[in-house]
Length: 130
Image (cartoon, helix red, strand yellow):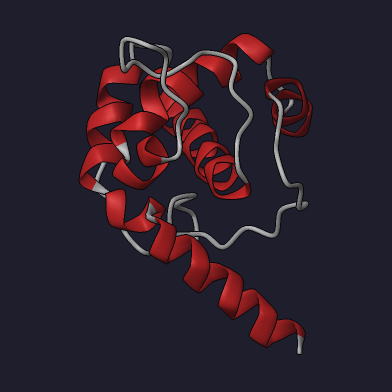
């Protein structure tokens, strides 16, 4: 699925999310209306293809990403955009396996999910609120 800057692409669409210091998997799941297992899968296996997301992940003693970690506001933003995009992709593929395609698309579109893109989106929201 090519990334475009149209309004229907969740990766490029601006989000106005509630703010917390840390997001538990339970709180993220409640917000997204999905299971905690879904949040865990995305937080530990799909979203870490984004370098800025991965840089904020806590590590275990072997250097792998710890499971069940709380998400920063930036990581929550990435998770929401990724899951929203995955829902569209899954619908387009009519239930076929989509996670590998999702990871590849997310990896290619890292600029849309970078910390810089997150900060830019927040600045635009602040300017429009002022």
